[in-house]
View: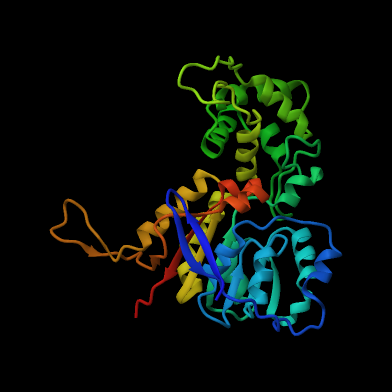
Length: 363
């Protein structure tokens, strides 16, 4: 048995066994890599071994990849012999993954839509319960790299940021139409941007002269609005490279994140997924969520903690009472993070946090 080590946030290494790949899965004579090699690179899959390990505790499962993207997680699960429904609201991602995974035949089903609607999307296909649900939150490398999608402040493109055509508003609609107060609220709540009011004020001033149409136009406006921070000299007790107080993060990073979350209602979708997941998962089914910023991870962590308590207690109660929202048990109370090798290979994985819970049998 091949051994694999997983790293937990704030902890050491925990040894886990890695399931062997079923080379016969897919029912095709096409070599596994031949199709993928003919396609352009789409996305570097994050926490691949860790997430697939926790998603597949048993053979022959029916699983859902709620954020199909380039199909990296789904491909590995299909190689292990499982049936996978891949959900994504981006038609480009569905087309790419469909081509990449076509060798698996009916074992793979591509589904266009938002993962928060998984209950209805799967019911339409006659599926009432599954053995695992994976969601890799945020945007893919392909979406960031494609200037026309409008996710990147470093590449000029239309100020769009929609993950799929079903989204009703673009980032340009919000930036040019929201009030100063609404803009400041979005930047503060979803980007945790301390200069939210200053940025919102500058945006509203600039759009009076010329409405925002491109990503670089907005990024330049935000950069001008940000207060200038002096560079402090390295003092006693500061290590090498620690003397500068000015952040290396682009001034528009948090604002672009906030607008993207607002455009795609990312936190609302995540909240709906968490609230309905217990209805979709069979007893023993796994819920695996990979998040990349504190807003997402905080929501997932609190949900899993709350729904894994069989009893709840309050000061005014004489004794603890059964928890009506008890649906899960936490597989690990600490988030699983990428190992050093993966971080060296893919810098994006540095901020990835995987949390896992298992559906309990309440019968």
